[in-house]
Each structure stands twice: as C-alpha cells, then as structure tokens.
Amino acid sequence: MVGFGANRRGGRLPSLVFVALLVVIAILAFNCWNASSRQALLQEEVAELQSQAKRTEVARGRLEKRNSDLMGKVDSHKKQLEQKEADYSHLSSQLQARDGQVKKCEDSKVKRGCGGGLPPRPP
Image 1 (tube, helix red, strand yellow):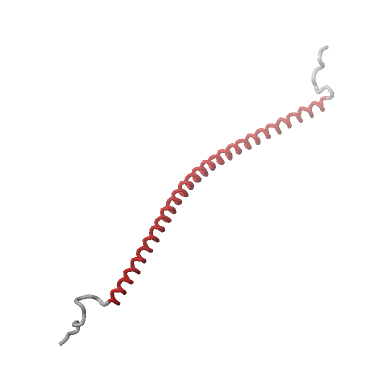
Image 2: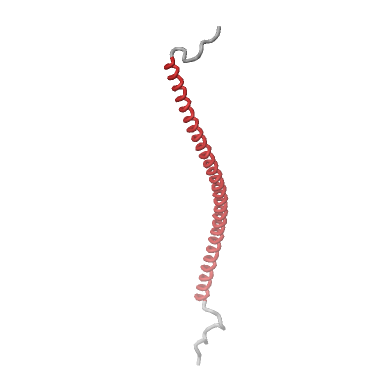
C-alpha cells in the first residue's frame, strides 16, 4: 500500500508554494525598505524642526529681552516727561504770579500819576 506521501520527493515543497513564499518575502522586503526610507526622511524632518524650534526660542528670548529693555526706556521717558510737566506747571504758576505782580505794580504806577511815584532824577 502506498501512503499519502508516497509520490512526493523527499521533503521538498511544491514549486507553487515555494514561489508564493518568495513573493511574500519580496513584498515584505520592499515594505521594510520603504518604511526604512520613510523613517530616515521623517528623522531628518524632525531634526530640522528641532533646530528651527531652537532658533525660534533663541529669537524669542532676544525679543523678550529687547522688549523689556524698551519698556524700561519707556518708563524712564514717562518719568522724565512727568517731571518736565511738573516743572512746566510750577514755572507756569510762577510766571502767572510774576505777571500778577507786574500788573499790580503797573496799576499802582498809574494810580500814583505820571512819574509813578518815583522821585525825579538829579541833573
């Protein structure tokens, strides 16, 4: 009696199964190569984005420092402006007081007469 494996050749796979396995291996190799190349491109892109993020962070730091310096200057200029306005107000009130004194003096001269109440000059 001949058994089930009697007409097979000593442990060899049929050629159709062998070709199918080769095709599967080829597909897997292609997918592996494709995934590897994509991974390399993505790693390059990540490295580029990281360097861009570092540059952006450095630029942001510089801008924040410059902004704080400028805000300090603005505060300084505001204080100077307030001081000058206070000085102007003080000088303006002094000027008005002097104008009032001059007006009083002129009014008193007019009331005293033509000479303004001053003694005549000796010749």
